[in-house]
Length: 103
Length: 157
Image 1 (cartoon, each protein chain N blue to C red):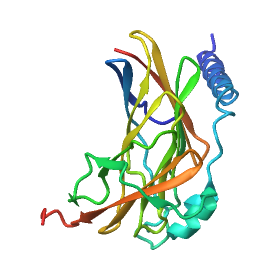
Image 2: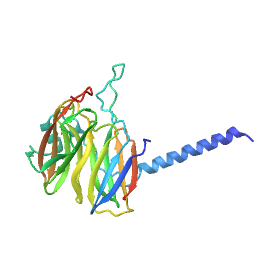
Image 3: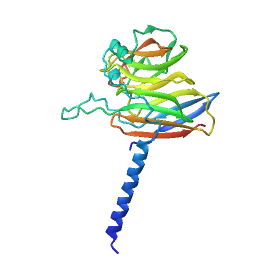
Image 4: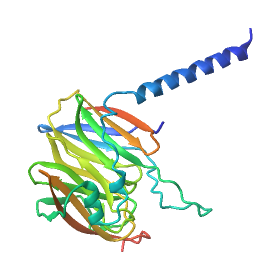
């Protein structure tokens, strides 16, 4: 299991700003190791953020997203104390879900 | 009392619990509803191919797409911040494409109603290149581009 994400959700006016920092290697599949063998790609493919069971953002990523990806977005609504959940799935089928409380 | 037998039992119990947790995680509803990864689109090497794989025609240039907190010169190509805001009504998705990367398509964000068409993330760039923001709004595609210079070597040129 990968390390937890750092998620921050803040109410700004009438929308919620969500910032996510994930912990993932994001190997591109282009690099070679010391023996000249290609290091296989290993990256996050899909990211889904939900609030109250409703999807507020979904994304598909290629290997060109940076290592330890950062993501920020805003959605309308949200209330202090409510939770925002973020899930990612990588190309090896590994997944992780974390949640944050809106402040 | 046979202590090693105790330990084995305990260890075994722990593993079973972990496996159960893992299995429960896999079967969580909602995850199955997440869209499949569009492999074809992420394998493409040119704008035309990417557009075809995404199921759209040639995108129209648009001034309603803006880059924010995106540098003109990136010192480290491995971490280039890119922020994109679309002021086109009914924006459905925002994609980031880097022209001179081995595969152009970097990320696609689906924007459901209620979410602001504005996202920011960090991407990798192999070299100085145009970065395209591709926006799908009301079934049509729009594009804006920005050149980001990448100075490898860290001199900050």
